[in-house]
Length: 169
Image 1: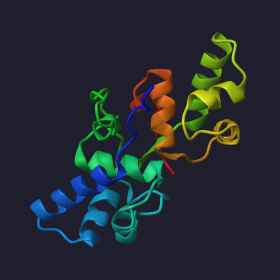
Image 2 (image 1 turned 90 degrees about the horizontal axis):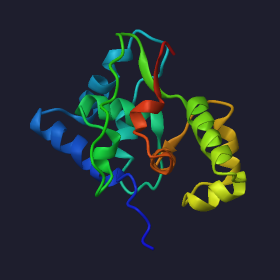
Image 3 (image 1 turned 30 degrees about the horizontal axis):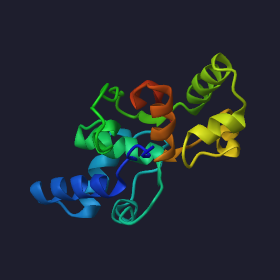
């Protein structure tokens, strides 16, 4: 059985670059524009090197990608080949930042695990590239990255937007 397509980090980079060129912006200006909505909050701004450093990476930090997607006005699923775009990302107030709610993601995975009578090891075995330890870390909150978060949402059959929250930090 063929493995489903993953979140395409290179396609995200190319979409950012195409918008950068179309708007006549430098990478520094793009980083500023992406970070502008949460500039008055305590979140760290995205750097130009974060954007340009995505090329060739196999994993990228999830919350940063959410800000990039908001700037592009795209869904995470729009960067998964063969996957239909689903729920749009929620809007947030100025000074807030969109983050993944990893505890909610953990609870959804745990509920499905219990519903199916599975062990954590069996769940990890069904989701390529996701280990038992990374599933356990979700319960503590904190950060997650792409493509892991998209693999988890796909396993649950839910849009990634359902696992986001507006945060003041």
